[in-house]
Amino acid sequence: MSRKGKVLVAMSGGIDSTVTALMLHHEGYEVIGITMKTWDYASSGSSTKETGCCNIDSFNDARQAAVHHGFPHFILDIREEFGDFVIENFVEEYLAGRTPNPCVMCNTHIKWRALLKRANALGCDYIATGHYAEIRQHTNGRYVISKGLDETKDQSYVLWGLDQELLGRTMMPLGGYRKSAIRQMAMDMGYPELAKKSESYEICFVPDNDYRGFLKRRVDGLEEQVNGGWFVDKNGKKLGQHKGYPFYTIGQRKGLDIAMGHPVYVTSINPTTNTVVLGDKSDLEQNDMMVGKLNWIKYDGVTDGMEANTRIRYKDKGALSNLYNEPNGIIRARFYENVKSIAPGQSAVFYEGNDVIGGGIIQRGELILNG
Image (cartoon, rainbow, N blue to C red):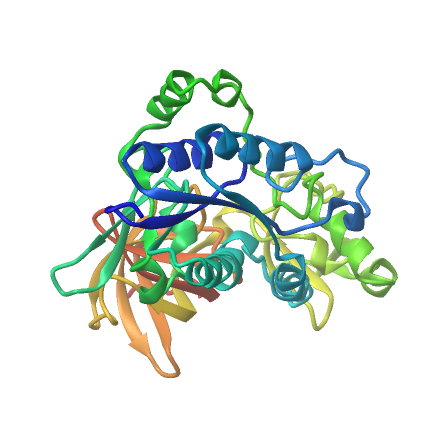
């Protein structure tokens, strides 16, 4: 038994998780590798070749690294757990006219819980992942997620849903490194093929990156049910027919198949009437937002008026806002300046410097006129 402890490392077969496992192994931890199978590509109906984290080559890469360095490796099938929650939520959100973030839902409700359950069964002190973020214990005793050193790879945004129990057991060794350093480590450890391996940014269960096709295959008769709805302007004037409200997202400009003589954007979606509102770029601007389904990390809540840098999408740099408590566990974020394309269903994550205060799911956005 290692004096440093026993750690269960989530290994996808990619560079980040492999370097994480080998780094901890070399530091003297007793490492057990585990690869989670979340999705069966054959059942997606897509003809695209398997890519990313759930294909047999990735499983083999993870296992070979573990065997070569003499630590155990297991494959964990969580397809049923994953499908029941993540995929059903994904479909339901689009059918409700919202834009979901399945990676957040998976991290929050499936992957970490599955890891912790197996870590407990195997007598592991910790679980570890290859995310570019950092975890530390604050002076108030709470565990805090902070941005990774490499802001181009920072993944703190998708981790806002992890609760204190999970954070207290989690290690993220890559948070203090830049991606270039991790690639060099892979080379130095004898894995040049990993250093050159391309990264996948698609949703794991939508291998062709075509969520519209996935929805059509997943929901029988969906296309017939929603086809022929109307594009309308902000005053309700009909502009032309569309292919069905679930196939559009807030801020979308391309692929609308409607000629207006000038650029138009999706500004809101109404599933009840199967209408999609189009407007100018300026119509996407809002400065007030309601956020629910909250999880607090750095503190156990916020005081009214607290300032935060609020991010409304993964690659968003964020915008300064004040946070206010509303009834029924809702937070109102009031931005100092207008922001574009607030999309219900997406995550809002609140930052204090590099630290995640907490986050939640955007319920709605609106434009509040000052004065």
